[in-house]
Length: 115
Image 1 (cartoon, rainbow, N blue to C red):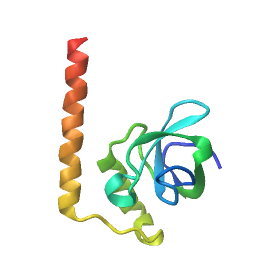
Image 2 (cartoon, one colour; image 1 turned 135 degrees about the vertical axis):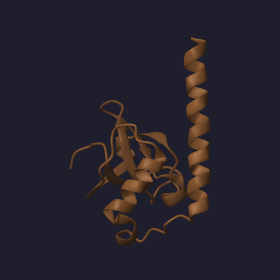
Image 3 (cartoon, rainbow, N blue to C red; image 1 turned 180 degrees about the vertical axis):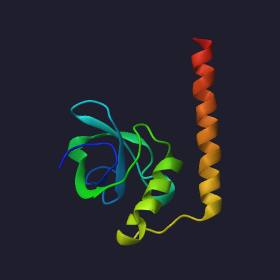
């Protein structure tokens, strides 16, 4: 299988070992950016070595650098939450996640304006 955006993987090393994640961006030949998102699988957005993940035969349709909300929506749309035995997060947790994402986006915009 190929390392591609939207590929569902299993973390096989590190503190998140045994948890599912989604490839959000290919950084280079050795590293990718993954997310769970945290409220669904427990894996926060982070850079990981490709040797520390095992690709699974599942893929969801997301764009590169998709937000956690977009990834969560793609998980729900694909039906993989039930198939992989994951627990769908409560709506209040989802809204909390959206607030945190908007705060992070504002921080990034401020940093760009300063430069």
